[in-house]
Length: 400
Image (cartoon, rainbow, N blue to C red; front, top):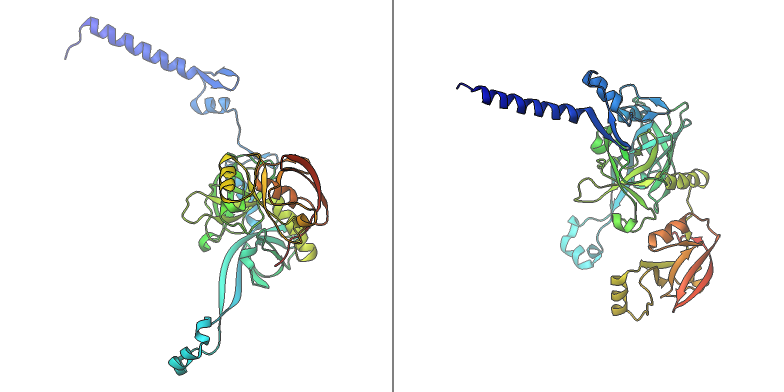
């Protein structure tokens, strides 16, 4: 089809306008402080380098070799991550109903007469804290085992002795006889924010030295939120894939520092994993290495965080008279506990602990956990509309 001179002129004009808009659009890049001009004469790769505002992270202050900070972090920490194989003897007891003489007479010689003993085996992860063979892992990885088999990344397999286990935080420590071992560097888990990089290393499903990556998706998850209400930990939540066998392995930041211990997953969930903050783990590990056990400060109260809905429900279901809808309500005081001796009562509303305002039970728990057994804590409470300050001397959490 032939074009008239008028049509050809129109098409060339439109093409010119479109090309000019493209040049104008590629000439300026928006930055945090406005717009930045770049040189159109530079090759595309050079333009990208010139306009990069956030260079690749550094490991120990040294730029990464290939710009992949994940690979560099793993290269640095990977040799200190180990596989832990634990075996425990389990006795299968007969149900009490089979002790009934009727059943014994009915089954005769076919009736089992003694408990059967079997060996349960499990695999988890851990990492080396010091070059003399001190390791840390999860308590549930080594529960019931006195010795474990520790396999290093270089292929060596060594016997490990379980030094101590703390079920309340799910932390355990192991010692192997070796020297000059690669060790991790610990980071800071107290100033984490959602959105930061998170790198997990471990042995999920028996696949050694597996690396997954994601972000920290939340912090301060309480044990009840995670589904393990018997633990005393505020967990880090991450979307880095964590599977059975990852337990006890390290969670790293973008600098290759350990910020947590991968511990739990929610059944049926996707992209939800939880790690024990490294500050908590280190504190417990130091006690376990020193004394073989960990002590946890204890008040002896059951609490609930107040809000309008909780206030209404408690007022409807109990005889507790609540005058406010903020704070932490004491719903039960354990008999002969430190709280009981300090004359705390059901219905008291905790507003401050050690001068720090609190609104959730997990905040109270965190402050109490950071103290020492036998130390004094000042609680500011609201009792029937009257503000009082009460001194409580913490005790040791009961082992039974």
